[in-house]
Length: 601
Image 1 (cartoon, rainbow, N blue to C red):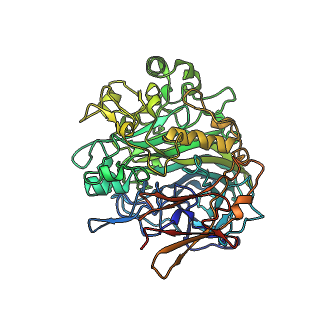
Image 2 (cartoon, rainbow, N blue to C red; image 1 turned 90 degrees about the horizontal axis):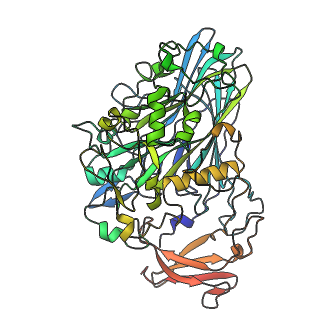
Image 3 (cartoon, rainbow, N blue to C red; image 1 turned 180 degrees about the vertical axis):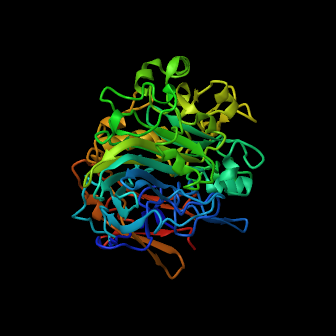
């Protein structure tokens, strides 16, 4: 029997603070969203506009443990990113400096070195705050006000900024499909860094398995809107109310052969690319934003800056949200986006035409808040949707000072749920639609199809899949879409009550600098299990009763009973062997439960 999702392995791996390291990584595996975290700034893998993901690695993998061999072909799994990272630029007395810590390539989209060029690794360590030890005993040191899994990575950059990234994951149902990253940017130089640019460089491509299975190849070019390589069925969107940039397929890519089998209860689901994946801004630094007279950013025309300065004389954020193809050469392309001597790369919301769009297509009440902030390269959200630069600028950082940002990577089963069709995002149509002025479009889901103008080769978007089929086992009922997941990431980080931000404007500039993490109810954990062979060649599942006494100040509900499940593969189908009550005399003896998997032999 494979019960991979309940195996608990405890370890803490640390390296010294005082000297540089080799490039290294740890993997977040506690929740449903798995991710490689590097001590160079990279996330997922070394960026590549194609290629593969090595066994044991995860590049925004959701659902997890998803590699498989099917029809004699090896599929590395449900990975959803070509690799991501962080870009920095700042002006020092000797000139402008740049650091591309991930999501950087040559002019053909192939990997280039990061270590020794843009990053000097300092530290990588993983801390496991699991409530149950691997021997089944309760962990007396379990901290309910901290994440179950924490990875701390640090690196230096040629900009003079030392980056400390602390990432957190949880296994709690409903809170297991996001990773929260807290960034601390410290000026370790002897001089003030001006016009400091912080850019979150992400690639979203749901999913590797879906594109390999349905289209034969997983490459950035296949996600583009333009022919011949681009298939035209992938969309990037920006959810203004959540400050969330994300991607999704047109209809989730139904499997051509195993749709009915995979759509059964307890199984993986019949859609091969159902994921909506993205990045959510939880907090950005406001205190260190430059005043208007402290930046050398050129504004060639009034429209570049009209309305962008707030009541304190600081630039409204975000400053940059640029979509791009898979070729990400630093000097030849992306450095120019962060050069203050050049015109800003993405324009801002300003003027009567934009205010009319807010009034007619979105929400007029939010115009005052968004006026002066970047409106993204919306015309490229279908044309080249995978890569994006989500940037904040201009900052001034004196020596020894630190500024903080927090983001969340989020994954959900589609962009929305059935009722979300009444809401709109920026994007969601082909380039001709944006050129015609249709910036905001309804939110699709896997509950029903939508029809609106400028959808390209097909006149619909979305799917009726969930009208006739159950949710896959890895999706928590009530926390289905990426919007549901994002709202819970906000709740976890801020400590505020759960809210649906389709009806509210989230304001990351008002959020705390670091997460609260101390308000979410905590479920009783699963026990540690061991698998033994019997003489009859059956699997015996054994566990102790320790979790029956688990207690914590925010316990969601008292212990009730165990459910023992089995599956031939981590993706399913999961079926119940039996339900076991505390002290069940059929299975409990000498302080342990023992149950035989009847199908294992």
